[in-house]
Amino acid sequence: MGKIRKLDDHLSNKIAAGEVVERPASVVKELVENAIDANSTVIEMELEEAGLAKIRIIDNGDGMEEEDCLLAFERHATSKIKDEHDLFRIRTLGFRGEALPSIASVSEVEMKTGTGNGPGTHVLLKGGQFVKHERTNSRKGTDITVSNLFFNTPARLKYMKTVHTELGHVTDVVNRLALAHPHISFRLRHHGKQLLYTSGNGDVRHVLAAIYGVDVAKKMIPIAAESLDFLVKGYISLPEVTRASRNYMSTIVNGRYVRNISLMKAVESGYHTLLPIGRYPIVLLSVEMDPILVDVNVHPAKLEVRFSKEAELNELVETAIRQAFQSRTLIPEMTVKRPEKPKTEQRVFSFEHVVKEPAAAPVVQQMAIAEKEKPLNPSFLKEEIDVRTEESLDNEDEQQEPIFKIESEEVDDRQKERIPPLYPIGQMHGTYILAQNENGLYIIDQHAAQERIKYEYFREKLGKVTNEVQQLLVPLTFQYATSEHMLIEAHREELAKCGVFLEPFGHNTFIVRSHPSWFPKGEEAMIIEEMIEQVLEMKKIDLKQLREKAAIIMSCKQSIKANHHLRHDEMFALLESLRETADPFTCPHGRPIIIHFSTYELEKMFKRVM
Image (cartoon, rainbow, N blue to C red; front, side, top):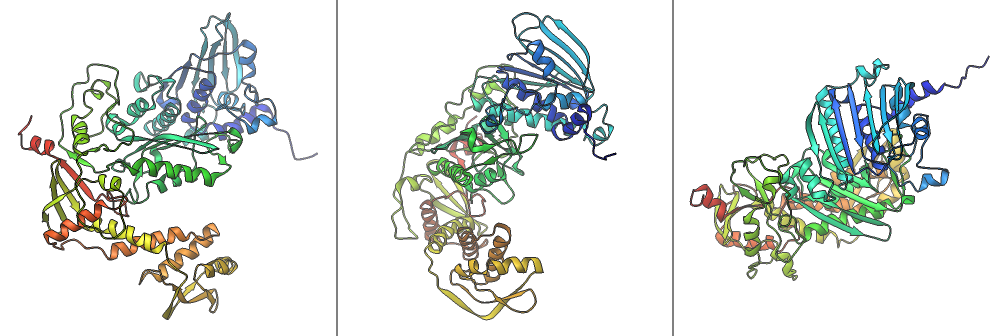
């Protein structure tokens, strides 16, 4: 007798559930996506014990006929695709026909659904088996309850995290679905407590405010770019608003939330030198494209996708982000803590004066010293759109003549306008320059400022390098494991084209007797190791990235350090030279260069105004 057996449907569903239903958040995601595909405009979610005890999803979508309701719990039964050609043009969130049978196989499911034409259908399943099936009165839409999740798979239940952790995963899923579909009203409750509410008015800025708070939403700016194949749009946070992980970066592709490392790297490239190491922006990136250019049939959870023309898309995303920052003033403005206003009134709120398209006079953004992020409170959104922001708009229209140039090349006037003329009044601890103008007090980190100036100088200089090489008095040796040595040997020609000539030198060892003349002094070994690592990881060398790193190293080493006292004319020249840089707000490592205390805030601190 043969050993291979065909598994029955019940066991197959349990195996599929292991991939599709990882935790309560997976159930919420699948059921809410079904509601979205059913053209719902209102989706309500009620949870108990983070969804382990109960998940209830109510929508006002199309609903189902009795026949469809019964068939929906059969494996690979779906209304969303008909043949293999549809797999390459998927426009719905679901299409595999695995979610409902997988969920039902590891829980108790009760569903009431109707199309609004005649009676509805009521079914009850336990462990994937029908327990009850009857006709009932039902409004248009679907009401589905999933109870006792993983009751028959104790091993899976054993590895569930705490209620707090699982609830965090659920809210994360719902937040991203709400961002992807601002035209749908989402309401999430846990044991009756409301965790999220969106109005469904189609304005994604209101959803951002509901999720991240009004203060963060004020500091997010729109991006947009388009090519023949892609339409990129969304909102990105100003460089002053960062988080410690990438979890706040949401990428939406054709209405579907996805995880794509390549897109995230493109976003980070757009913020290059604007963020400190280990800090990440808050981003909502929405990409629309022909479905044939994206493969969503990669994993049962449908979170991973593959793109055609990925390099073109990444370049478009990076360009969109850089263009969004080009004409904006990114100086963080320090403000005193204000008492929170009573949250008693609910009103329609507006972002009219908060997020503006780039103009000749960019908006000076705000950064609170001690003010915590506030939850959604529509009552103060319209009232507390800072009058100071409007005042700063008027003040920034006033421009004065430049004073000092590090290079003889002409600088675009619009580039100078990003920082107003500053007049130094002193220095603190030999580290910070204090400057003023009619808008208030500015504090400048002198090392970071000169680092930015020199970085842009060296970046341009290294971009024009020749193929000249520098001979080493003492050759450098590099030793690798056998497997790595063989890979490097296969790519020696590519390294030679970049000016690095590796010669075999004993067992698994290479010797280097010269290097390109643009390598920073003292960093030759580090740059060569970086080039070899790129060959091992990517099978190619990114010279642009290497020269970028070299420019950062050279600018850092050659910039003035802390406790270095400057004359008044030196401070003056440094500030004017900073104005002429392309990105005068952060050093190459992403640290802020300049901070602003407005006259209004200073007067508030000294109680001159109340």
